[in-house]
Image 1 (cartoon, rainbow, N blue to C red):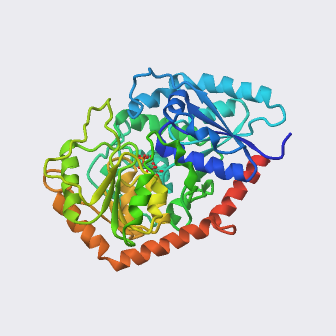
Image 2: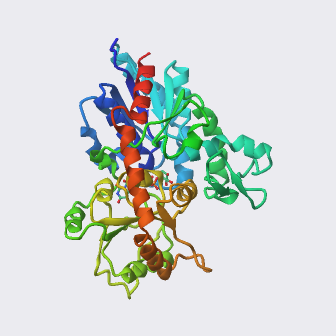
Image 3: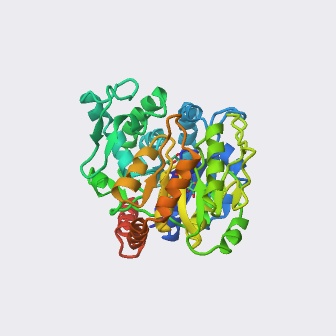
Length: 443
Ligand code: UDX
């Protein structure tokens, strides 16, 4: 029997989950652990085999996701149905792997959220499990609080929606939040009911690892000793898990600009912008009269939203790309600020680059993440909607100017960056936690 643990790592098949689990796997692999990384057949085809060369200790395996080839994989209600067919296939896959790997059987399963059933499969087979939560510890704590929120009559047990308008403090030392902005409220009743079940299954994980640090969310991390911060996960060569081709030319393009002069605009892998809002943003970026780098993902055939630029837009100061090497960009000296949807991975990457944020949350945990940026760490500002529900071009220009003129925010952003780096240094808290986790997996 090998003295190094063998992990089966399985992300829910969206980029915001695959990226942190892939980075985590690489960290484990560099410490001698063996990794079997499970992706869906659909995603393997989509990534054209690019991630399969990430190191000798990592092996990639696939399973069908059970959806039709033409189904929209960005539709969460569709991919939540993985539970229908995947558990039995996973059961067999693990048995087959272990039959072949007599000396190095799978010792631990690590999953992201939404697929707690994979921990149930591991449990049936006597294999221990852990969760790597791909968002903030605070959002994890909010899902754990669902029974309490129901008991106290704060949310409806069937829909998860607030029973009345109010602000609550979910945890000591966390910002007040509007209950309408709880992470499940924007995702519909079925998603809420799914999460109630998933949160139960995820309790089978003996550790709830989180891509965060003890400085970022001390209040949420105090919730349970099982919640272990291991962030920031920041290997820069792992954006290979892209569904779109990265445009490498933008790094050379950035080189021509002075330090802290370019506005970076990106809304992650899922957010879809209303066409009128898209036009307003385009004109707002023109109005800045500054260089900007804007990621506009190719239009999605399923939702038929087309990114139509308005006639007035000339974009002469900017560069528009369909997918960026984001971590490299956020570490480029020319970047002045980041207009972001507040996805947790983007936030961790921006904080590690010491970049001030302009927050434009779309759904789910992104509202809580915005509160941390603006109200707790104070490393950014929020963009406010007007009476038509749009973030206007004038608002974009005004807030970029205010943000770039705010020296206190810049100083705090750099301080927060230093704290992040300290955590992943050899004696840092996250490194120690990782060691603890690997030792547990060996036992
Ligand atoms: C999802 C959810 O939407 C988010 O709310 C949750 O916190 C995490 O899971 P996503 O919307 O894709 O994620 O956002 P984010 O968490 O920011 O992840 C996007 C990833 O794609 C980041 O790692 C980022 O580096 C990468 N990216 C994004 C690129 O590599 N290039 C780009 O052009 C844009």
